[in-house]
Length: 152
Length: 98
Image (tube, rainbow over all chains, first blue to last red; front, side, top):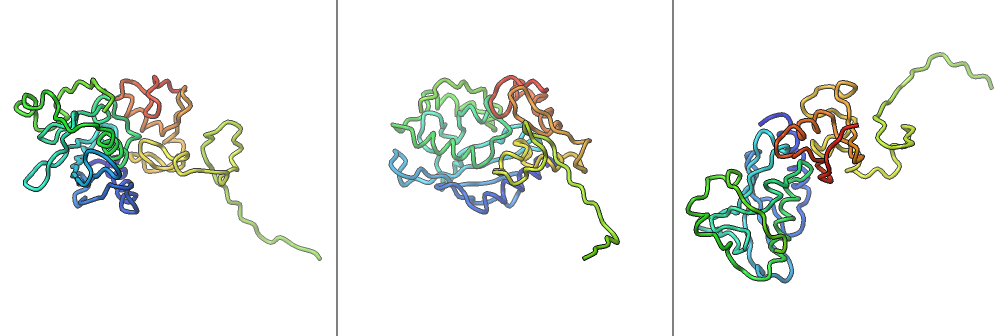
């Protein structure tokens, strides 16, 4: 970690501990560089009653560089079935890649992903899910996503 | 009544001029929290960026043509990074420092 990322993350953590946006809960941030948050869509949606877990990994150049954000997939967690979320938890969202801005924050990313889920009309995996998951790099930040659809 | 001043202490306070017609003494005029922070490091403008130790002239602010203001060191780190595409973090317009 560097001075810039440590100070920013400490500030964000203090704010998140004071109170998260509705439907978002901090699960763990013992390591300042790796945080887990849970996210659920409140109100009517195709994900009603489902709670997902997100993992944020922050590099020493955060917030100049975007964090790595994935849905946790393990024995107890599944990624949401969504056209922009691969079954390995990788998320195709422009704000995590080419449209990242250093004024965004952990809670801003959570809110964006929450609204991405809320606006989804039908549970579907991305059309290229199997191919992507077979060849996906360990970190989605090393994947070359094409952002082609802003409607869901 | 006659008052004799035996001693006085002068106290000065500085802040960056971040608004037009800013005479420097409107600290409590509707300051929302966000407005007076650098959006990149989230440190108040009057503080210094996380890589500096002392606030002041060595850690100045930079205003862009889009009117957004950041610590000079913070915005330079951003615009020099490939992810920025040379854009303002707030409105994604081309960043042109004034």
